[in-house]
Length: 475
Image (cartoon, rainbow, N blue to C red; front, side, top):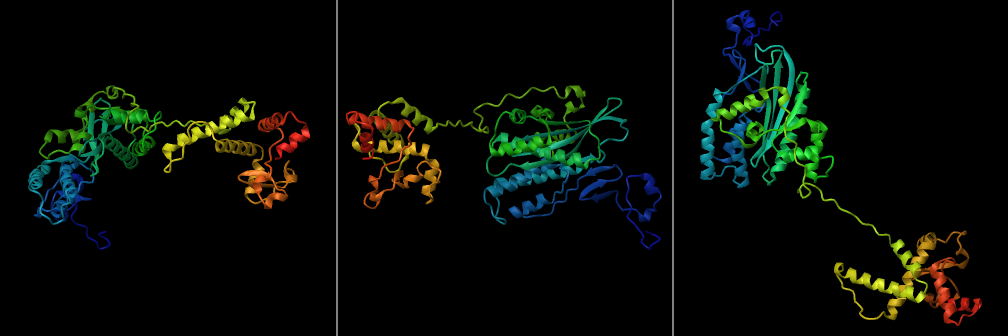
């Protein structure tokens, strides 16, 4: 660059060897620099935080301006900023205007939070995940924690290194903390949302980190969420839970999920928020729980979740559908009787019971008949029986006639010039112009109902001969 006439200045490096060959006049004036919005202490090779508070009015607009000025892409102090975001959401929930004066109690809460921000300047995080002087790494693991609470939900990821001397080091890679929606949501759903957030962090880190991991582990303190994840193959869940479980199962496998006690779950800090003064919880957040320092064989010994209860609100109710074939029922009724009169009476009683059952579902109540069967009911029963017989024997012919098409030439009733009147196929004769109801109904020759009708006419006419019975049936 110098050969081309471009003199580069303000050099900064965490390597003393590099700085020694650069003239002091061309070095950066400070050992701290902002890299992508993050303050980097070059001498100590640590990420630091610089809090600069501008005077803003105590309004919703001013509070949001201060909260938005906290740039923390890695989520290193996201639990401390969650309280401020909760204050903004409270103002939204109360429908406070952008420049309206905020309530006194929220104003006191906001001022208390502002007074704790100065503590963040004392906080520093090693830029290197693996500290200097650490031995040769023989095992690299990624542990992801998730949790949810009434205030919000969150997730965090930790790298766990084990060297050849069995020394263990854990460091926070990234953390995320989100507020719960204004619309109230159940705790299990929020915890499940935290688990989905953990899966998304895992998907991003596995692609962006140039490392070979030996093991991935996911932790949650919710036995309900563990039950959803492990027993998902046996249950069907409602849409909210089902969609999030599908994301979890696409990213992870059930055997990667384990239970952690709430006191040892750093994601619990992300979901509830903490004060910047709380150094104990901040230490847990930045360095991970103590049990990660233990032997790897002891990390996965956790209780199995209980099976999901049948009355769980998120489990879809199993609906049983019973199907009854009307054809089978009518065939069994027809085959049961050897008398045309008894068959008509049985069907008439069945139709009356059908109307009785339909009463509760109809807007206009049907006129119910009490006592003995009427002539109208017997005629209706006879009409329904013949209608069923024709649908069984002449289905294609009925379809053609209803669509104003002639029946096929190979049909057994094609020569009878059939027509449909009152839903029944009849013989179209010379009397059709006067009264089509007088046209004879066509019945199949080999049918139980046809045989019962002919036997009924035969007996009522004193056991007359064939021609007389045939003539009487046509009447």
